[in-house]
Amino acid sequence: DQQVKQNSPSLSVQEGRISILNCDYTNSMFDYFLWYKKYPAEGPTFLISISSIKDKNEDGRFTVFLNKSAKHLSLHIVPSQPGDSAVYFCAATLYNNNDMRFGAGTRLTVKP
Amino acid sequence: DAMVIQNPRYQVTQFGKPVTLSCSQTLNHNVMYWYQQKSSQAPKLLFHYYDKDFNNEADTPDNFQSRRPNTSFCFLDIRSPGLGDAAMYLCATSRSRTGGGETQYFGPGTRLLVL
Image (cartoon, rainbow over all chains, first blue to last red; front, side):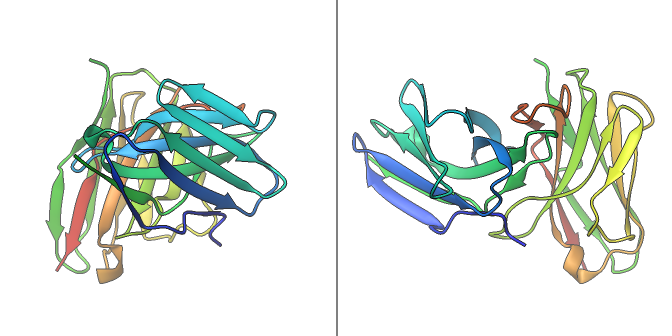
């Protein structure tokens, strides 16, 4: 049962524009949501997270938005840079443990 | 730099021949996880150790076992690999496993090929 879904396997944007990566989830008990970034030949690295008690968290060029009623979150990257080209994974955890459920990832390509 | 190390990066084994993948960490984290990721799919949690306590996911096949001899090392043993076990295997660590949202730190993965 895929509890976390990233329906867009790929996204291509122009350098300087906004990148919006989307993620949907089905389990209303998820309490924390995280985004990881993965470059080729490397493991995923933590990017940004948001608690279910918030609807927005910002860190520099990266902002995550959470819409609990829609069970949807999104990652905004503004402005996008070629170095942002990577696979982005959405993940979620329950309030009482850290077992992460991942989406399948979205490959972002930022063109110069 | 503190890190999570996985060896080897690529492993080729024969159908049915036992294989062991290793993971080590210099972060001194209490929790170590093993994930399986098949092509274009989400990483799937197989099991984790919280200190010496082993926790198996309900749908992890019996063919997969794990050992954690000390804080720094954790091994994934596949007793009789099948063609369907070919995948990227990711090791991760975290300081704890309570509270949700605890960042996990990943190694680069071991890609397993079964011939």
